[in-house]
Image (cartoon, rainbow, N blue to C red):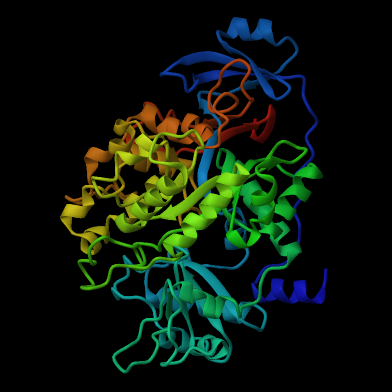
Length: 550
């Protein structure tokens, strides 16, 4: 490991110690029974599933499975319920791993607790800049964003940068602002915002494209640390029951690490990758590709239309209710969005574009229409999040063949503050899962981890119940947008497979499909909603191999 890599690892608070995946010999097959097995096909339920190699060879009666797979390893579900392999259709694998290796601020309950965690990290960790992620202020008693003064009160002698959970804003202490040359006279870059206090000084908050002013000066993780982060993410996700991930905002270093790990047999998940523009040379030159293991696929590019609602970066058609005159941020000029989409079309690559506000989503749809036409196409281009839609734009997803890649847990967190940001009228098109599905659009489900925890059970619960984890739901939470249990299952199985063009291979427990299977300790199709988040993943099978439980 180079000195630079070592310094980067120490500065980010993570020890570079790889934890390899234990090698797994290919078994003659599996016979899985002993609990309800939902195949993902129109409510179908079977008694047993048998596999051989990486394929399903039987789904039906126990007697039939025994006949189809003589000598197979028998796995008793012990009452757990099995499903097609759950797929997270929107996550950030490297950041999931790094969350476990750096200052994790998830669940921070106040600015005072943020300061306590920062103090502990500064005391226990090595010298140098401190990076953390995961705070969100919407429940804090202080009812405000943190400031540089809040951080300075704990650490003033070295740079500190703490990213908000959504990844679209961060707060820096005075030392970090000075390192980046940010002063009262610094103008924000296009697509960014630098809030100021009553004295005209920067508060320390940096929104969307302004984040780069500090982030570009912070130590970057080296290749060894990226590799370890990927290993940790793989291990964590398999333990939660995920069999695949659509990984977003991927760098070339991320791709190199994934291909190396899979090539060496130290990898479990299926990963479909959408790369940032600065790492898009390969996919725009050669189009989509798959590595020799068959698990690591390069799909397309990831673009950004706007920012996030919580930090008021989501681009709206009318001003924010709680910030008059402010309409959010466009992170990429619309003409550049069209330019990159045209390049992706020429290469046969997919496009995934982040759009949260109603203006951001309209720009995304308009841009796709300019490049592909307004009629239905089968290119499987996607809008990531699709959170706030104008009623006029909602039918366009189905009409154009655009997949809505949505994260149910965003609603049960955002709806605490979304009414204040948007007002009642715009909430009618917010987190509109049921309306999109009813219109004929494909809606695939994800988590956006590490923005959210990355738990399939929380996502399923949010999709079918739309209450906070403590059972709360406000009068403006749009409970009519909940989906049926079958629709929720499809979001994480059949629709996830459709979104990457593999609906004939993945997404259902059927003969000839890939042998990917997830089992949970409670039956999600019948359990009381409040009991769903407390279930556990008891079995994860990927390509016919048991990678968790069993």
